[in-house]
Length: 297
Image 1 (spheres, one colour):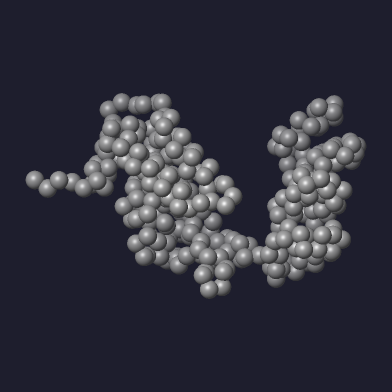
Image 2 (tube, rainbow, N blue to C red):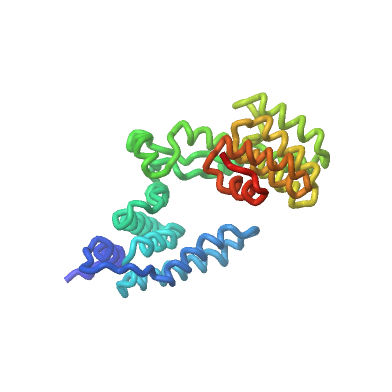
């Protein structure tokens, strides 16, 4: 009799039907998935150490499969998170199967994980991705590029179902990934006035801009200034953001927050009211206004 290999064994476990429902997620799997993600949020990652930790987590997850300790939708999701950072196509295939099973058990889970795992598995096997989740840095130019893709296998509607950007959005994302940082420019200039001039100029250029002057990036830059104690400069940047993006509810919310910190309560509440007007579901604005006894219409 031919002994089934590891992947075949796990595949059988993944596809086999269970006769009962387990409602308690495996806490060990949850911790390993959390550790996997948190490790990648740290600055100056030592990849030699992280690769060893990843391998240990994969080996333990494989053991949990053998012990039939992977049962719930969240268990399969967490197993996929662990396996996706494997070193070969066996691990990437396991990630695909785990995420697929997770979605089968609970369609409310984030389906992006499955699409990303499929693309990563295709990459490992030297084939074009089909969803468009994977971007790589060109070693020659240093620029980010979307990994080669076969756009004919998946429609944009299917991409949306799996929480993936459309092809056009992916092209825009690739461009955004290569834009220069306004924070870096500020660190060179050490002055807010040329910074404001640059932002206005770059926004006016639209798709021809060289710097990332999106609403989100300007907002983040404003918070960077605030957190470094440069409150007045932060106010100038956040106020500018409300002028450049007058329909962005979050720009007014952020502006209001810094205004409150400076004691400019009246202006702050006006900013929050504007934010709530733009987005009636902004719970933070509601909370602040209610705290100051402002009636919400």
